[in-house]
Image: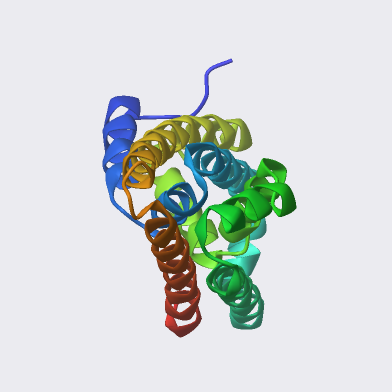
Length: 213
């Protein structure tokens, strides 16, 4: 089956540039990895990827167009996502500091939870939906059949690249965290990393809340 896709090499290059540009998703992954370790960062990256799968599907079936056309729907999704980010950040800031807190956090917040936090963070960002709706059609011929399959393929390519880059960022942030943890002031460093990660999520939530279409 020939899909109505054109300029695929250009799409791959553009997708790589977009995925390498620091944004809320990458900052979410780095913040999780710095605060809770590289495994948490990798799970956050996979969760972000799951959210992108949802946005790709919505773009393919045209639901993102409905979100773009409805200011009320856009605002509702935006504020839900903003409140969710702030809630995660405040929870991290309130947690007890030090190595004991790290052990408690590991028991209380399994990696599955981090995965779903990443998925919801991405899924509840309406600007991601609008980006997919604006970016993918530029490489799809509107006059040919098979557009839904083309959306899914291009979205999959974009998502694989983005997940790989975010995972790499998670590993790098995790390595830096482990090096800091080996120092004599490991407890204080872990506390500050956790608070910094929480402040980052709060900032992302506020930024999303204040953003416009």
